[in-house]
Length: 281
Length: 171
Image (cartoon, rainbow over all chains, first blue to last red; front, side, top):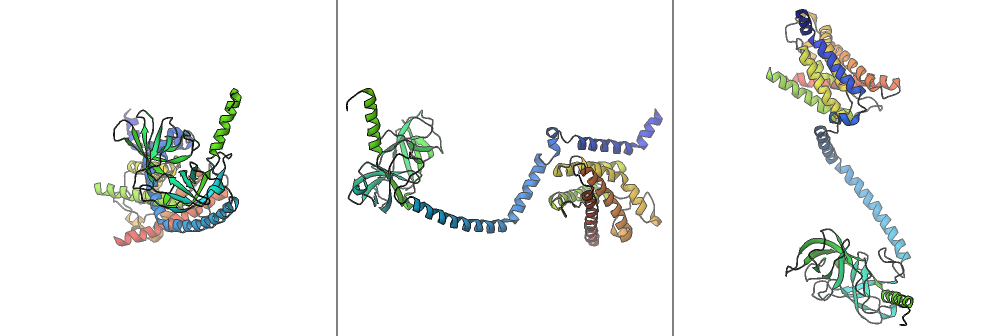
């Protein structure tokens, strides 16, 4: 027994060597069982952190190259955009079709020739009028979403009440909610409006899209208006008041479309309904 | 004693970081990667406790494997080199001061350039051979393994030589 003990002490490092090599070989051979050994890999927290630092450092060192690459990309993209815009311009000379409006609607493409932004009652003037089929109470839509409602028309021009008008009032709802409210503007910021009279039990969240609900005779349902920035209480505390960032940038607004046949479509549907019920209109 | 341990620990850590962050990204001819982890093992002084040498090397083998995803290759090779390092050192250290009890530190100037380079060359060669053969279980061609062993050995030796020049001169 004592001899064995002496032997072990004398050759302890041999033993240790064999044990350690055994462990190493076991790991080598069994490294296919990945889940068991994930701790002993670069996936564990410490090694991962070190590699994260390294990548932060090296990415900082390569910022110059990255910048040059970005500039190159930008120039290339600008050239492409210019080419594509020209194609688009050619393609939409008469009418513009926006993807969120059903293609049956007829849209008149117009340009904003004059706009005010900083009064209580702001107006847009567009370069299409009665001769182009525009009538009061028609919907005006920009590429971002709702822009306003036609107020007056002359032969060649029309005046639009944009969202940025304290008299403007548009029925709307959050995209994933069935409760609706009224969009109103308060003088000040040109990209912020408020949805009032939203019931307190309506489940609305910050970041949701506000869109038209189709209740009015002006806008079809589902046209985007803006994104909810904040959900707050109305002054009387009885309902929610949603602060909305408008999608339409009125300070740079130039191209708009007027939806000219929405009433007629509605009338047609109503007539069809009456027909099917056997009522003589 | 404590200071020795701290110095050794720091040395291992620095070599490990250089290996993991810099040298692991070197792939000359697609296969040649210098393995500097052999260096701190070679630097163990004569008469050091063999058990502690084994444990140090094994531990840093684990850490290297964790960083490199080499699954036991670093552990195996480190342990093996730690096992043969004392014998290798005896073989190449000058025999006139061959006293087993003195703490003789192997470096470029204490051993002489020729002896040190021979010592480091064999240590590095064994290290690269074992490591790359273990690695070759995943790689098909023996030519690549031989290139990896030869190139890695030479490259590591050059790095060790210049590191020795810089470190020892300052002392």
